[in-house]
Length: 395
Image (cartoon, rainbow, N blue to C red):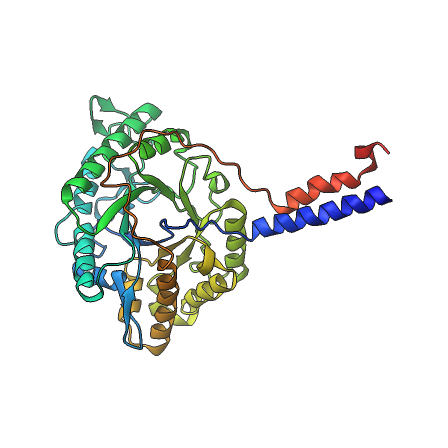
């Protein structure tokens, strides 16, 4: 009986420890923990001029004071819709070739918009607020080398994407040009922090990892991913070599989903160490009776679940929904964006103005090391319930 009591006490202690681990988000002190998605490239997108970017760089509250807003910006594109060309599986009919990959690079570095406009918007804000307490970061989306493309173009030779080695060679070509163009641009206020894998699951492309991850890290950059809620491979993001993964709850887009979907996403994030995505798009304005409340649901649950206090967050805002929200005069919108911006501003206080990995010299190549995933309280409970089994102890 004494043995049984000791075992039960140990079990309670282990479960308490497991529960504590399950309540811990993956905040990384001094690193990128807030990133806003900027869809940019094809004709249907915003050009993201300096004036437009200023609404993402700073926020003026209802009481009249202004503060810094988003510290990091992810520029990405999925397709060239008017030409039916896609940079990732499933968004258009024709897989992009080297010509379109080069087009995407040129779009990233267009003068007067995109990255250039962001750099100038920050410089303009510095004239009013002084130096920010952190360096603004940029993450750039990578095109996916789609297997169906068997005539992509040439680097040192003709590349066919039905071969994994050819796909990796094309990725190396793209990344090298991207980094060189960024360093040559001479931006004063933004640093290249990392690259983003545009596929939102591991149905295609898993065989490229961890080689692709090592390729990114060898250039001194971090690797980012944002899988959808049920994406194959989402639990194994560390083994693929990503430095950051943000889980999409997908609650905003599906009216049939209950509020518990966001809570389930929070539980997943605690268990597997991912960040979370906050999601809304233009339907917030055009269909207020149905979609209007769902953005507030994210903010309410994320506050209650400690996400704003301790978790990395990616902000999906459709094409221009955040810009519209920042310009809205509706009282409910003003209160909502003030609340959201207040969380971001307080999170920015945890950041420091330490320099980014770029434009400094890249470190020596170090392969990404798989990290052991946390066990859930349930699995630990089952493991230690075995202690109560007489056959286990052979009493």
